[in-house]
Image 1 (cartoon, helix red, strand yellow):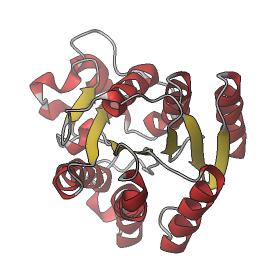
Image 2: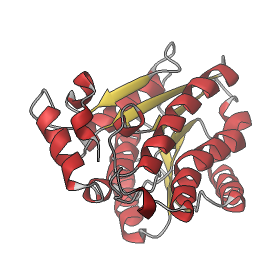
Image 3: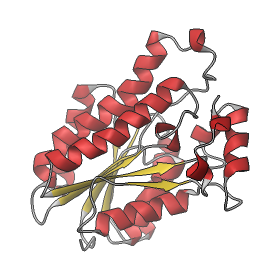
Image 4: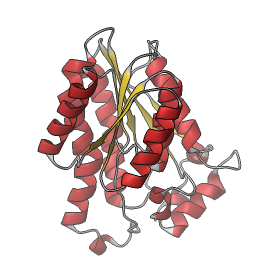
Length: 256
């Protein structure tokens, strides 16, 4: 798909990875609708970068745990651009709770993680499906995590939410074909991001130790993979792992 002139909605565009995705899509020719919750400074920085790339940008407040907020954000984007060709479900929430500390992972924390990381992306896909089908078809890219592929992440809830997002990708690839392709990028540790800072130390250390390339994932590689999946016409239901090869051996040493 030629991305020039397309409109991409990127959730969590105020963050490190989301900002990189917004910039990469803008450089590929997309106008950008980026969502944020409280990080207004990050949203402004990303918006400035998109503008510098010569593309239109619109910032939208979104709490994706709230269905009414999702519906309002989608209406806002469509009212601004009159179309949406790409949805990147990047926004997520995590908290560092080592796996063995099950008593610390209470029901409220579980619900916040699953509602933000899995329920929200599904509701966004559902809300935008009709509009993504328009024109020459649409693209959905879900940003998951290697924690959804093996038992190692910031918490059991986070791993389960990302495993669910990966399988949601498979299900939506079937449900939305042939007009919309649905794919997934699964990052590992990305140094310096807010999400990485919430990881238990042993998980971060394990990811660094197991990265066969000698370096872990980068926001730029995640963004480039996202752009590639948006351009591709014959890829759907797939997950690309960006982690320096840390999951090549699925090491149990990554468990928290």
